[in-house]
Length: 80
Image (cartoon, rainbow, N blue to C red; front, side, top):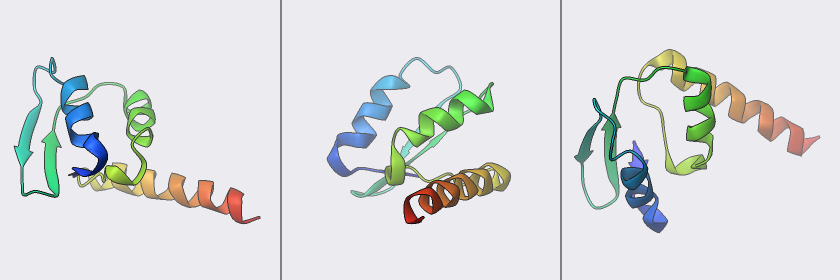
């Protein structure tokens, strides 16, 4: 799920315009969904982190959990 705040959705849409299997769905004025088949989960996770809280992984759950755990670890670094 992609937040449409601060032109984030438009920037992502521009970056992904040449993706062969990508599907873009505008949900409402606040959010849209992007679905795709990817190779290289490591580089995809790094790309997702560029957008911080503007992007939320919905599926697969295992990837959502990995992103969540990584965010908690990063938060813990700042709280120490």
